Image 1 (cartoon, helix red, strand yellow):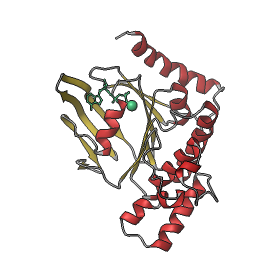
Image 2 (cartoon, helix red, strand yellow):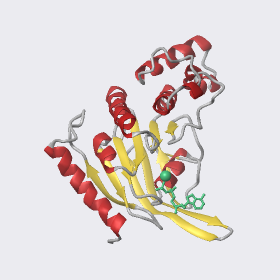
Image 3 (cartoon, helix red, strand yellow):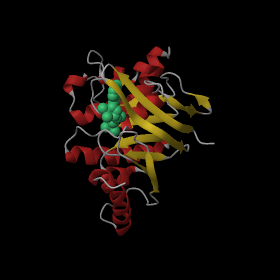
Image 4 (tube, helix red, strand yellow):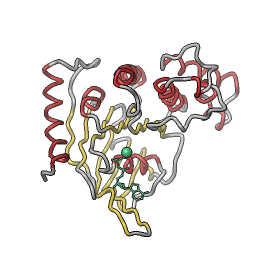
Length: 255
Ligand SMILES: Nc1ncnc2c1ncn2[C@@H]1O[C@H](COP(=O)(O)OP(=O)(O)O)[C@@H](O)[C@H]1O
Ligand SMILES: [Mg+2]
């Protein structure tokens, strides 16, 4: 049995103007230590899947298990990294942001600082711990979010297009850094993106979603290439083409 199991998960949003089926019959098992990229076009239901696993939204059908137990609410066993950086507290320093979850759990100050320093260093921000989020670049803020999520030692890291708002160069640097951190920690990751190259560069498996309404998992492509990934290699190109063909049908209307 995998670390995470999504079993026939569906989500229908009901509003005053009617209902919208965002996700339909989504089934996936995540193994401990894998880096799973969920790829899909805009609006196909990626964020909805992540939000249900995070415990922010309840499924309307099916069930979600983490370590064999149903997910019913958010918890420290799932670390979430969002696309924007609004989730960082601007009145706290970078170091105190990283240590915030530890503080909530009553970890003592000296241990908290030591752990926060360790993760600050891991994300390459040594010596920047006293700065506040407003004094940091977009890329640095995403590093802080990653460090904060890891500092809580979650069972799984949930990342929703975390590099989507960054410029291309910063994004490439952060992708490489995340890949290195994953290799170091072997933390299980569910990473959401609409960028084919990003998925192929990071993932051990890429899940491609069908477009909505009723977005669901269409195919899973294993990416059996060594890290760090060489994006101009034949192997990379081969995987890219395979994934591209799957997503192309979703963009251009094939079924
Ligand atoms: N709270 C909500 N109420 C109604 N519809 C929603 C809500 N959240 C998402 N949706 C709809 O569900 C679909 C999937 O959204 P989302 O999961 O955000 O897609 P993605 O992250 O793949 O771009 C979209 O059509 C979106 O408009
Ligand atoms: Mg989204």
